[in-house]
Image (tube, rainbow, N blue to C red; front, side):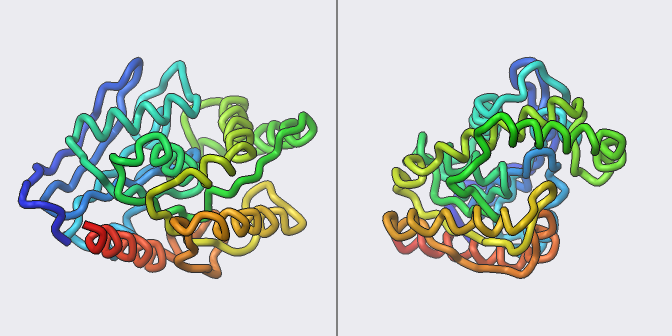
Length: 267
């Protein structure tokens, strides 16, 4: 999977960004660059099955967000900080027009970054997201806070497998609440996208959702798909939101190959 004749060196280390440092891994090579964007509190380790399926002919760039995985803590865990971090990683590694593969919160980051930088990205794979719906009222936000307060005892264990950040339960909740607000305002962003986006859609519920909430959220993408032909569903898979990267990595890799082929045809 060749992107250009330029060869980029492999690198793994800590990248200083603002008041923190991010753990970054770049496999280097001449292949099409793929930048993987993690779920809200997840680490880069989750992408290993996708990377293995795609193989060494691609340039794989993964990194841990602030206070996730091996990255250091920060005073700023906002969505705009996450956007700036992606900018910093791309600049530091000299990545041009990558494919962005994002899971959940990472998919939200991917489409926002693509909408702001349409000439700098080849396409986005959205792994069970983003969908233009979110909880915006105080009662639902308090429900999120209660959930993380109940889970705070399990967070040290969840960190060991890359599913929680090195931050408090309240900070976890703040990230989730902000993400819901951004999702609720997402429809104009999706309508504006001029780069190809391929969704890999999960099934069933996610942690903290109930009564088919997650499935109803997924249906909100349908009117956008009807309006914007750049967005399509590549696959609907059986796994749920939390297990999709581990269980349906082949579908994610397939959507990535689909986008790469499309960008080659458009040149």
